[in-house]
Amino acid sequence: MSDHVSPVSLYITIFASLMVLTAVTVGAAFVNLGQFNFLVAMLVAGFKASLVVWYFMHMKYQSHLTKLALAVGLFFLVILLGETMIDYASKDFTPMPPKIDAESEIVKP
Amino acid sequence: MSNVVAHAGQHADSPSRAHHRALQHHFDTMPQQKEAAVIGMWVFLLTEILFFGGLFVAYMIYRIWYFDAFAEASRSLSLFWGGLNTAVLIGSSLTMAMAVRGAQTNKRKATVNWLILTMILGCVFLGVKVIEYSDKFEHHHVPGPNFVWASEHAAPVAEGGAEHTPAPEAAAGHRKLSLTPSQLQRTTQIYFSLYFTMTGLHALHMIIGIGLMSVITWMAWKGRFDEEYYTPVELSGLYWHFVDIVWIFLFPLLYLVERHT
Image 1 (spheres, rainbow over the protein chains, first blue to last red):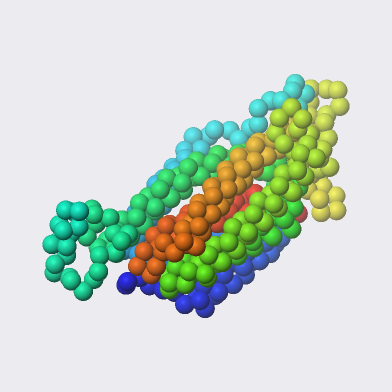
Image 2 (tube, rainbow over the protein chains, first blue to last red):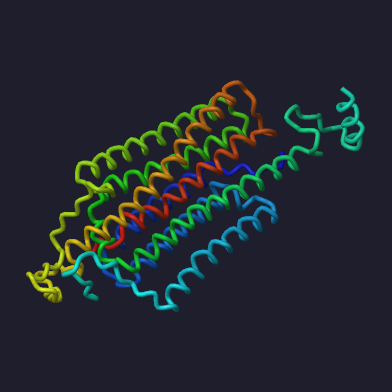
């Protein structure tokens, strides 16, 4: 069979990288980066996910058609997340919690 | 048996390749059959991505709205258990990759052992989840009528009057939240609703994955797979890695909302 068999060393390397990146994401959470904390966390998670998809899930060795299928799925995920967030960001839905009782009102930080 | 005869005729141009017993009649070759299965699995996983995607959208909107509540509720989760579970799940992805590799290289025993190890790690993950869930039941952090959020950082409730005094600036590095206790009670509940939905669905996927793997392990033990046909191992591997990826995102989103204060 023409299937690609990855060497064990590659799998160990990917596993080690994933563990290191987990430590990085935990460490970064304890540093105050303001708005960038979230961005860093998501970039690290995205990179970890890519490593899993590319090597553990053998996407690197799949046909273009399979890669295209994944790309289409991610495209729709971006639409789902992105356009919803654009909607919420641009339409001025106020980020107010519902009034819970008469005497308490939200105070913007 | 006319099928076999027809097939023999079709493959007359490649007589060197024996007809594999796992090759179904509507495919020409084993690689073609495998590629079809792999694409089918990926299409299924894409529906799963969008399924979890809906929850991620809900999470994002509420996180932006009630960030302080999310940050505070997130700090109540144990980073130790969450980190341990991340390591366990990444480890189980490695053992799963090794199981697929074992099948690819025709090592029956290795495949079975790696699959069993993967299932054990999956059970460890679920065991830790049980510890975490029971901890939340103890602390009344399960959304519903018994939910109690006892916060140390809530802004003081205005006394008697309808007017609310803004939270005073925090002393000694502790930022005062601008939500009153009753608002925190409400908004942290949203966080925990999302927490239980997302981790609960993730755990359900893991239980299904372990169920799948026990069947695959049995098939591998029976010697159903070889280097030409190991599609079920490969596909359950894809499923298991996908569950791992969901957790890779859930871990920072749920456990690490804001840890530096």
